[in-house]
Length: 638
Image (cartoon, rainbow, N blue to C red; front, side):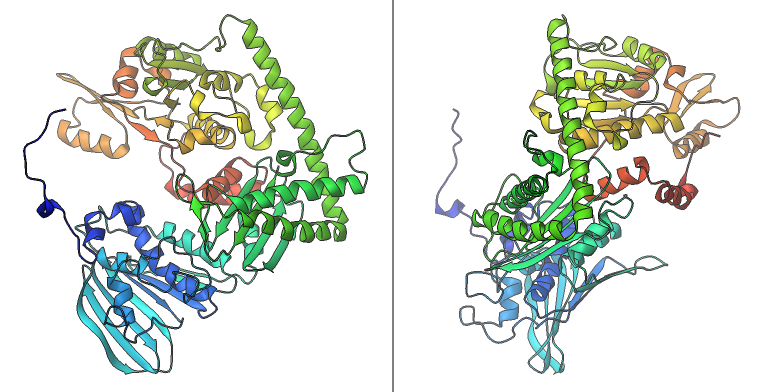
């Protein structure tokens, strides 16, 4: 290996003082400097307020976004301590905002029994990454204030008045030399704070956005806690138990709160939290919940002769079909693991949750036999469907094993076998499929034409899906199975691209496919493998110049102002089949020119709500959604 001749000694070792390390590597502390990292600043300050609420000292939190993206977070907690800190020689409040890993959340003798902060670095990191920060504290009969610029103190803590109230107000402006944008997304913040209010029963959280002419406001307070949470999640679904099963118990040092409600849907939606942190990868608390759910329902079914002696036990997936549940535990010293550090690893929590669930759920079922019967009927139906799906799956496997090719007949595959460089276009209609097959690059682009309307999986179980002649080709082509059997490592294509017409039918096809991917191949979306092709809406033709393709109405108008309107022909594309192979390649398939939209899933709860709304059985919420959004529709086909 080549050596570089340069001096490497003590002088080359950098020591970053104070909060310089945060400014040097902000991504290490807040994940990114995108809008997600920007939101993280607000979450860190609000988390501190919620920790006061968890400790029993805070009832109200107010978040305000002012013009210029200035954020204020105010609570009525105890207020940050203002006396001098023995180790730093400055006030405790100034220490919290200027010293990394300083706070009241470390060790068993800390000021908080439990804390939502993963790292205990919130206040100082927000200060370091802000152009300026101003903190006002009320406690000990006084009003105290301090100020900072980019993490450095400009005004030490000073008493500015008297007060018999308590609380902390933090006002800050994020540093535009650090962040890609300073524009907060109100809807994202609103969703986060609604969730926090659900998880902290009785805490009032309000948010106010004053940046536009018409202010946006929301006020959240849920005395029902997680019970209110599952009712909110299921607002557009038909329920089997109108009143959620609600469990709340302090088991030693671990408070456990659980809410469960069954619906007539075929999917399971279980959300777990530790100290108000969304543990998206689950962990020991979720394991305890699942074990108990399976045991208690099977025991009840045996004891009441719903399951006969010859019948096999219901499996966990049968009992979880149609469930919406939220599990929240408070752990004094949580141990997190997993890819995103959001998987609880404390082994003792499994037994604690299981024990709490066993007693409370068994009691509920005994006291509510009609609910128990309705849920178990659904579970037994799910078990039969699971067995039918297993037979259908085995039939597909046997059939494909006997055939020379395991791929669907209409698939025009690519020559490369390297999944990461391959892509499959799922194309609406044989006509467009024919053009795509002729226009593609055969080395890495595969084409699978679909015809007719496919199954709405929101209203179907897995056994129907395996036998569906519209979905079977998609399952076989992707090659990684579906549902619990789906294995992301077996996908045959790095990009799965939905290419449909720019009309109502095309939008329906896209929605049906996305519903299928979300419900039965969700890792495909989570891994970033699903895309939407963007064919052009218009072609502008004029003698003497090459044809110009426009993908939006705005782009059409802009081109008409360069080109001029005299002697111009405008073609509005309604179907992919209107383009010949060369045009389809140039506009929609050439990696150098095409526009692809990656399908992402930032929020599983919101995605579940949307698919239930658009594709579920309940018509009234869908009608309201259409009426509310009709004014935003463009390119309506009548």
